[in-house]
Image 1: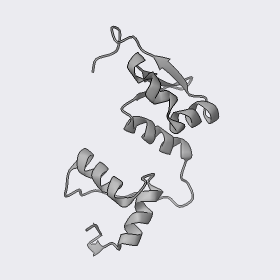
Image 2: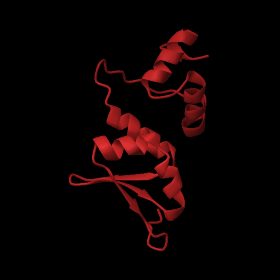
Image 3: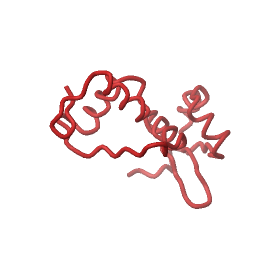
Length: 116
């Protein structure tokens, strides 16, 4: 059950919200919120008509692969380890980021990785 401003949301509307936010289905969205924010989740849903930007969707999908993205004014880089090369090769999201949005992919030596 999902409520918005105290009103129970229909399953069809939940699915539409999930897809608009880049999820495959509502169950995937609910699992993501449970994992990242816990339930019950209380917050704001910000909705902007006709301003959805594919690049940000692709960034989210890349982060879902547990990859780090570094963005500055001059460069956009997806940092991977040598163990992640095959995962990156098979990702249609990363392929689109590199082809359409000029993201680079950089293999980081684990000995010199920034441990946060």
